Image 1 (cartoon, rainbow, N blue to C red):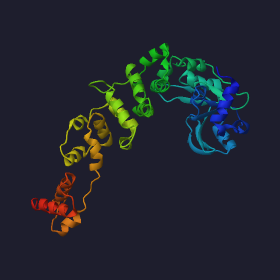
Image 2 (spheres, rainbow, N blue to C red; image 1 turned 90 degrees about the vertical axis):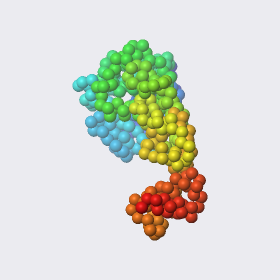
Image 3 (cartoon, rainbow, N blue to C red; image 1 turned 180 degrees about the horizontal axis):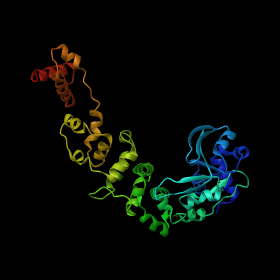
Image 4 (cartoon, rainbow, N blue to C red; image 1 turned 90 degrees about the horizontal axis):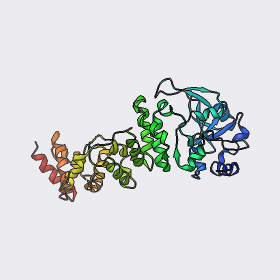
Length: 369
């Protein structure tokens, strides 16, 4: 177990911007959630979440912190404190009027009541910024951290907010945690359909942004909460996309998280492209045309190695343009057709100079009056 003194030293080292908060604060203020969890795990800094038993705006004013964003419904502020983004929330109770609904917030609660509304024991810990800075841990989160267990605080946790199931997969994969058996049963009974698609996909995108995204998606599938892509090993393509987008050039082509989700959950949209075997550069450019970045990344991950060369071929440009052709007498659709013919020739190595481009374009234009 970590002593209060050790925890205070770790807090000061990881979050020096919090040193003067307690002295300036008009109300008791606490570091909570993932920041405390990661301190106890020895992982250093995490996102800074503060809970105040009072008014977040009053705390921000007392600190002279610049407000970056506010969410009045939940009584939260995001502020800049000495160059660091800090979230400040009022300690509160929450009620859910129906499964999957956003909570109704009742500010003015003590810190222990605020901790009771959280998702997992390992995230339901707090450290007061004023002395004595002893760990507040009403649900034995530190014990579960030591055991490598993810445990829901109460049986209705995933009924109130089913997106917590997605977070469970994210945390379990990130930290290598096992799921406590009772929590696993609750997860299997979760109904993600009670939350809006926007909230569901927002949590999935956060999950997919993690280094352990594919492992987390496999957990969700094992609990029956997502349906993976059909055909073959369900997450093979997602793993291939993960490897492909880990470094340039493909890391620059599409958002990794979106590509992983598309690879894992479908729908199938790039099989024909993946199976194509173009014989010429111009054919490769034609085949890739009209496909979005995600489809191209998925096709490359599925084995379309010719797309590595296409990354260079797509940037090839003609030295001539429409002005050259209209000056030579071409008009209307013939101009575009002639330019396309010249580009095909250049891609395939048949138009090495500007003069070649012009001759090929004019010849093509003559055949398309």
